[in-house]
Structures are given as structure tokens and as C-alpha cells.
Image (cartoon, rainbow, N blue to C red; front, side):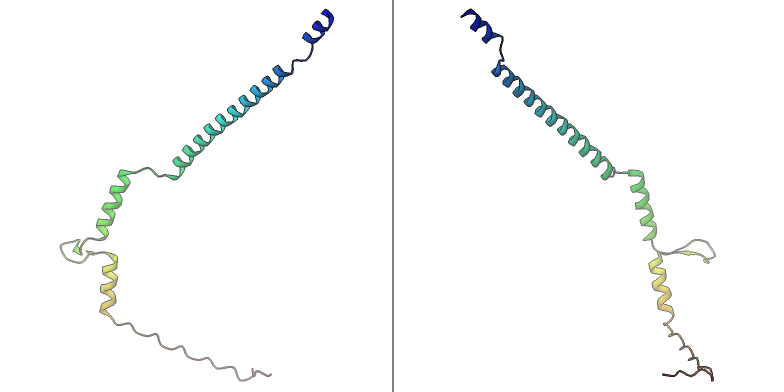
Length: 120
């Protein structure tokens, strides 16, 4: 009987192997979820940095000043009143209202040379 007990103790311990495999599997799954979460967070941060433009206050101020210049009232640049400043839309409207639009003259019709007749 002592030989049978010794043979049973030296054998394969199935519950310990199953529990170790289960613990290893849980560890691998938890590790993969942790790494995937870190990767997705880093990816979201990088996407946000690439797609969202930060507010550039000096540029915004420059654009506002430029827009104000474009919308300003017409004025003379020199004392002799030879050079004026006005928005381009106002200048185009003013120029277009001065002269009526003249239709283009009709192009003369070219006649075919005498020796070139079209035969069907």
C-alpha cells in the first residue's frame, strides 16, 4: 500500500495544471486589454493634435485688421487726389455703373474658296 500512495503522489496533478493555465490565460487577456487601451488612448491624442488647430491670436488679429481694411470707406491717399483706396467690390460696381455694356461686333463670316466644293 505504501507503494501505491507513493505512486499517486509522484503522478500528474491535474487541478494545479488547470488552475495555472487558467491564471496564465487571464493574465494574458488582462495584459492585452491594458496594452490595447493604452494604444487607443495614444492614438486618440495624436489624432486630436493633428486635426485640431490651436487658436493663433496674432494671426486672428492680423486677419481681422486685413478684413477691416478691405471693408473701409473710400478715401484719398494723396493730397492731389490722384490715388484713392476703396474696396474692390465697390470699385467694380462703380466702374460697371459708368459705362453701359457694349455688345461685341459680330465676326465676319468667312467664305469658302472657289475651288473647294463639298460633295456628298
